[in-house]
Image 1 (tube, helix red, strand yellow):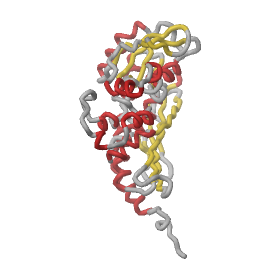
Image 2 (cartoon, rainbow, N blue to C red):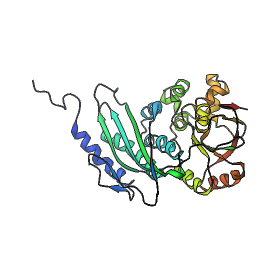
Image 3 (tube, one colour):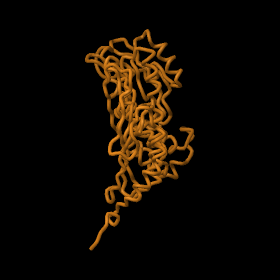
Image 4 (cartoon, one colour):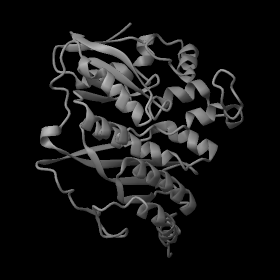
Length: 339
């Protein structure tokens, strides 16, 4: 018996075609630091000049079960933005400028056109964050994923001068927390989202008056990338700490930037919570603490500054197109108090 690799479910020709289709997207992200070309065994990147004591900052993440909605809707051009956003938003919290990104795409049966579409989103996320897409892996795994399903994850590497690392060490009682608005749910909490909204595409495509949109469009809105705004902010203002509001919401993420003995109070009426979160809280019958411990509630990033820098911080963020609000302040203690 002669059984080929193709007979077992892996068609290397599809892989070659996928690489050809995605090349233009990959090259569109190249920056001055990229050395070499796609197809090497490893990606090469030279360190930027002008950094006295460079420290590399790395982050890795995936998109989670938000992928289900991309698959259900057969819309694959934005999910790659989410994959990049989840990584670069993390590393910029330390003051790091993203340098490069690598992605991992896995599926049961490879569709070159589909993977190229997903990578087009990855490339868009890289362009938005200034990161070069210098490599990745496309894995065809027959029998492992159901037909049509796939997964995508990635990691980013950035650089910051050691003396400019942002780690929350100087945060004191009485500092101010400024929330930067999110584009929506971003990429966390979708296991609960799918319980609440279901997976019936016909229902998801129906216009919802309270949402003022079809649910599927809201649920697939890509994660906002804050890199440009944050990098410009930290050049203009002394930012003491930055929190990316991801899994765990306000409750888990904001305290991560505080030194021991510091907590915070959050005024939940300080900004307008988007309708999607209000609807989900009602549908799931969740307390404020429960929902603020799951979702970003309309705030994708929180920056901590001295009270004297609040006006300047807000002005700078608005200058780069962000919507923001003072949402709370630091206090003695620990954790997050919702008011």
